[in-house]
Image (cartoon, rainbow, N blue to C red; front, top):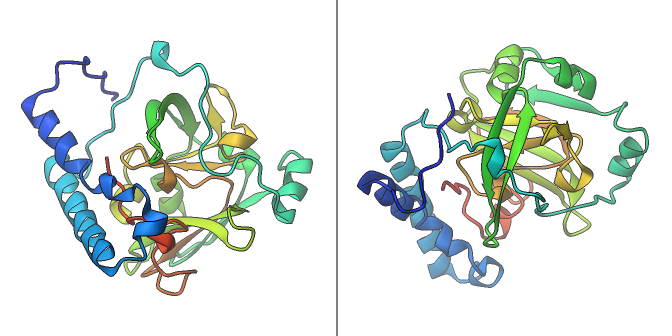
Length: 260
């Protein structure tokens, strides 16, 4: 069930408290590339991240839904975030054939590893939701996303009890060396609004917005919503994945939990 957006000036006291507390940690993200070199700032951001996670789970609950909007509020242009045209050899080869040879792998701590084509994913039961994307750079946009619910795919794969995180591997590189990646915990992974989106505004996902498949984690900031997906791995920890912080930007100083 979707939630209608609150009017501009009609926030309840509880909603205002939620927005105040849940947004506090995001303030530490501004200028992270420079501030992340300071040990005191890193400690402060870690504390803010823990507070943000605990506060959101306490006030909003594990199953609370992000606001969903009417179609009349869809943004005329949905601005892409991050990479807009990956130049990795793998991506260029797959895009040249309209992703007919692309496969999403699901592995790690699962009982039945999966390999899913784009046509298979498009044929699965899907969810459509109109939500707002909030970027750490300060802009936002509202779009309609469609795709299978991540939890349904994870149930199909059969998740081991030892799995604590879902890691998303991507085909783009921001620095020309390291593939983008992200991760979320099992609460967010099985949230009903967490999608693997193959469509934006009733059209196949554009390249700039993450074709052929991207993650939508509607209760977190935009950098968590990995684009250009190629694989999903269920893990107990991410200590041995790239910088060990659970994401490309987290390895460079951003907080791992980016709840809003």
